[in-house]
Image 1 (cartoon, rainbow, N blue to C red):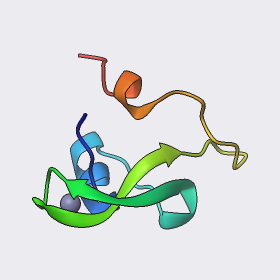
Image 2 (cartoon, protein in one colour; image 1 turned 60 degrees about the vertical axis):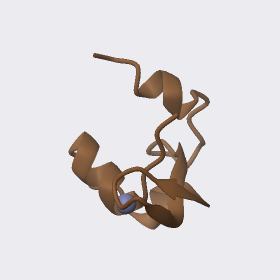
Image 3 (cartoon, protein in one colour; image 1 turned 180 degrees about the vertical axis):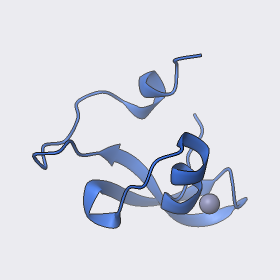
Length: 61
Ligand SMILES: [Zn+2]
């Protein structure tokens, strides 16, 4: 599974999420190639955690 820090996540998926819209956990960022707080969960507009795993979120090709 690819993990990305918030900056790489936004760049990769062309999003503009803030730290308050995601749950971060220290992991290995594939973009920076170093340990950073990585996005593991994205909240929806009402601050509810989206139930999908990021892996399934990334599956759309
Ligand atoms: Zn990164």
